[in-house]
Amino acid sequence: MPILGLLLGLSPASAVAYPWMIRHDYTGCGACHTDPSGAGLLTEYGRAQNVLLMQMNTPWTPVPQTGEVPKYAGFAFGVLPMPDWLLAQVTFRGAEFWLTATRPGQGGQPGTTASQQLFLMMLLDARAEIKFGIFRAGGSLGWGNTPYTLPASVISNPDATSELLSRDYWVGLQFDDSLLVRLGRINLPFGLRNVEHTAWVRNNTQTDINYSQQSGLSLAFENEHLRTEVLVILGNLNVSPDAYRQRGFSGLLEVPVAPRATVGVSALVTRAELSVVPSPPLPDGQPGLRGLPGLRQVYGLFSRWAPIEPIVFLLEGDVFLNTNLGSGVVQTNAATWLQMDWEPIQGIHLAPAVETLNTYGVRGTGIGTWLTLDWFCLPHTDIRLDGVYRFEPSAVGAASNVFSFLVQLHTFL
Image (tube, rainbow, N blue to C red; front, side):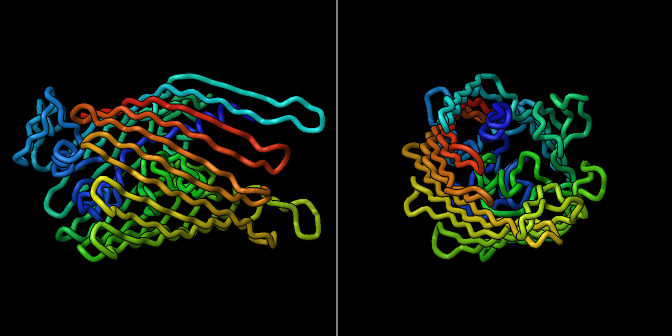
């Protein structure tokens, strides 16, 4: 098995979004983020809540008990005050990564074991938004070093080991505080906007916030009764030739159903003139056809629930269908995610999770278990430990057992 593919596929958390903020009665995302579905650039209010509700209360960084926002909540810890028309943020996330993958032998052949350790530059992005009246414009510029970020690259070297990235950029109009219309390269509105972008519900549905953005027109609406966003997808302009660009739509709708509880639905449908998904053999046993248009569909349900303030449950289930039009075969897949976030004291999060994956052509269900410890130890800073075990059936040969461990440092100005 390619160790690099496993390595890149199991390195979680490259952007910041915390669906567990519902424990503080935040069912929406637009108050704290400029992206109405969450993640990325924080508003001034979001910066304040990062200190007041997330930072650990310690003698060296006491959390204000009066609710007064300290100066260091601002950009560059308050050293460089921003004008009212500008929001800015520089984010770094680096990690040391260990991985071991084993596959038992078959037919008298010995099993295999592969291991790897290295440092990952997961995120180094500068983000900004300007606002004049109802006009808005935002974007990001950063650096990456894995082939998986190529869909977001602006400039890359020939061997694709480093790229200048722009994950999102857009112009828009903000009407009142509830409706935002944007045009540009935008995160896909779909499911939980969680940081574990390599979870199967994010990676395998291609709805993560690391590199799955698409260019298009977005309409987002949010009030106390519902949260919704729909993106009309015009294609990823970084993909060439044009025949491989996916066009269609992606959207979500989430509604509160009880205090600190929501349910939501998501859908994504795109079509490309040329499919990048391998065509399976035809029903009569003939080889699969090539050069066919591709239809991709993803449908899901998700929910967030905080029965008591220290505990939040996050649940998502998705079915994703890949069809090479004309082949007569619909490749059906499914993924689920269940996570509990427990905050025994402010700033310390223990988050076990379990996930499943059923893949077309693979017998058996993949099972993943996560155990995460996240410590918001300083202003704008957290240290995160992730242990992930995955049992991964294969279409050919024995199943793999994959264990990875990650130590991350995340901070932003």
